Image 1 (spheres, rainbow, N blue to C red):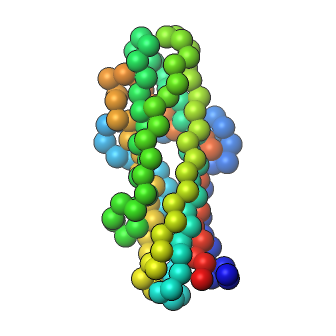
Image 2 (image 1 turned 135 degrees about the vertical axis):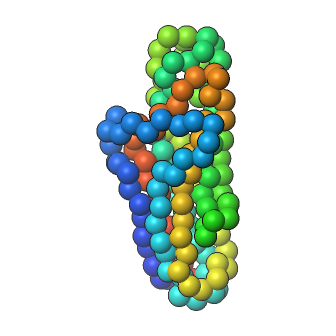
Length: 139
């Protein structure tokens, strides 16, 4: 195996250093380009997003949705519901996931990380950090 290319996009590596509120609509969080030099490959994407639940509604908890797009097409996604931690306290969560794409066509590709709150009536979600995504092309 050989590493052919690497790139990343970084909002922050630190907790509580940003404040990006999420609604029921998808919000662009991060974006980067990655050149794939040959068609026999795999692309490994690693994503980590720190987020907080603020203003929870009773014991109900909202759910974050993270989607990775390759050239505008969804290639990976994850949903995570926050854990219950009392009715009045803000709750900090981190969602990390990996996606492996095989035989991505040669050429330049754009990767975007989108986020949304699937249940905004159950509480507000803000991205607070860390927030980053990286991609490696490996043959």
